[in-house]
Length: 236
Image (cartoon, rainbow, N blue to C red; front, side, top):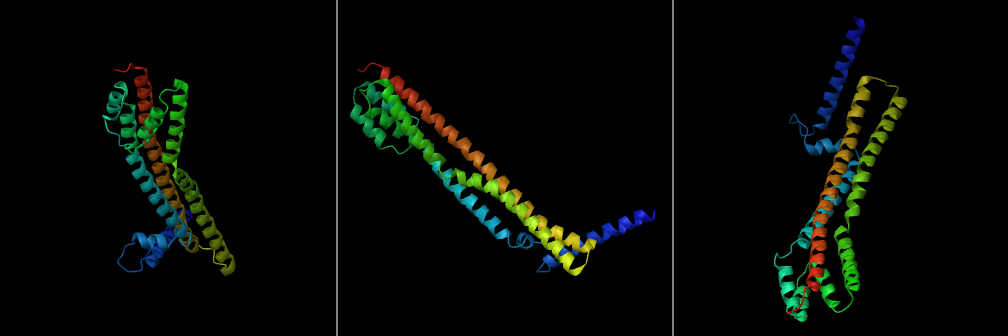
């Protein structure tokens, strides 16, 4: 019975000190902790973590805009190309493709330039352009993969640094109490939580953009296959 009472007293003391840490973090005294006040409890490592979050947001938005722009293809684009080629008006077909700004049009334009050469040469030329377009779509995606790899590790690093500081203070002051331990752990776990959240967001963004690139890639492959079929049709 005495043992359980001691445990209960210890838990109450820990809870009391956690509440004390929350009260100290409540700088404006409104009875609650704002997001800014909570993040400030994580220490100086929160600054690079916030920097990683901003970098991830910037490159996600930049890639999303670029990918969506690349995926905007006129539904009648290939029909117009087919009509020009089948009628023998290759110049008009190339002019139309050249004046259309998207990856599919650039692949088709390369194929039109190679009309008259063997089919395998045309296919290779279009495939090379497709690889370049795919590289352009995937550009800067590595930044997101870097963020979702680094952010959790940086968060754990913050926790380790916090624990080292905690044990150093205990060693220096000789105060080994639940109060000292609870406050330190509560504060330093914030960096781990922030790192995991940032890493998770970057991971979700990375996979979402890869899925969008896959859709654009399918459009490029389908249009290239359709163009090769057009070349097999007899001219009028």
